[in-house]
Figure 1 (spheres, one colour):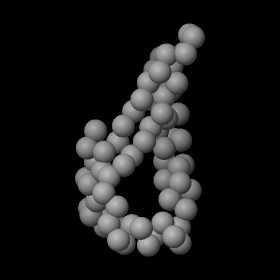
Figure 2 (cartoon, rainbow, N blue to C red):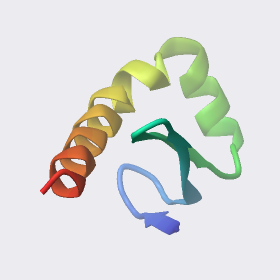
Figure 3 (cartoon, rainbow, N blue to C red):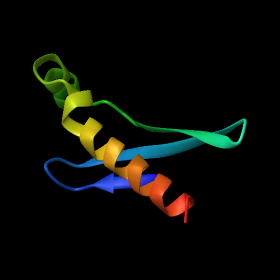
Figure 4 (cartoon, helix red, strand yellow):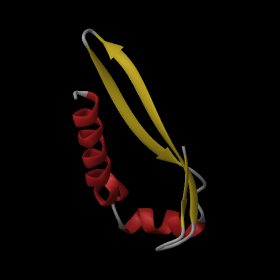
Length: 70
């Protein structure tokens, strides 16, 4: 899915869901990627991006799990 952000800075990324059947369940991975301008690279040096967005990814996956198990 295409994601366009306007704040805190403009960014155009792609979110990707990968679903893999495993036994009686499905493993889901969620990734986001896109161009990495200079400002983003500098931020990556000073901030742990996984920590910044990781909670949001985990919450989204938990919500997906809840909906899928209904």
